Image 1 (cartoon, one colour):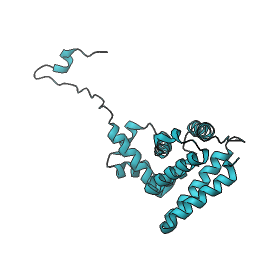
Image 2: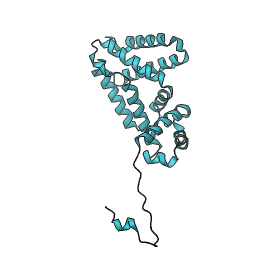
Image 3: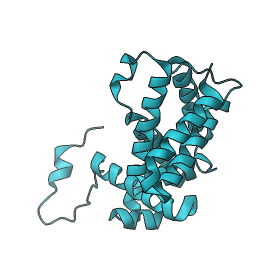
Image 4: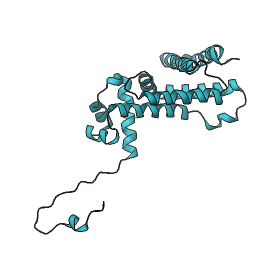
Length: 204
């Protein structure tokens, strides 16, 4: 409903009531809050207080709830953002590669590169994958998308449902963990992890 202009002008000498208008949300501040949440969750787990997340982002806790209705919504949005960012690391020319093994290796090395370059985000994603504070519907959606990607892009049917996607996640997690512990052997761990997954799940 439009406000009458006279209500905004007020009368000289009278006591006026302030009409507080909501500030437009900033995508930059939202991204800042998600980055701060990833950092804090990586260190404190999903029990991290929202006050600490807001402080890390350099904003008031009230500002955090302007962008996210509650902590569960924040963690759910963070989980989705991290999943998307990890797989966005895979170059768009994946479809131009013909060989199934070559495609899988392309995905594998891209995700490992993202994980080792963004250790806090990778750790936060692992925490949230098991968290009961992330909306289960969003988790199932991500799992379904993962199964479809395995089947349609890489030719690896995820049967029984959820098995190969979870095996792949476990192999990636273990490989990144070892690469971070012993960076000088990173290439060897990457190769060994890929070959182990290929033998276990992907080979015809």
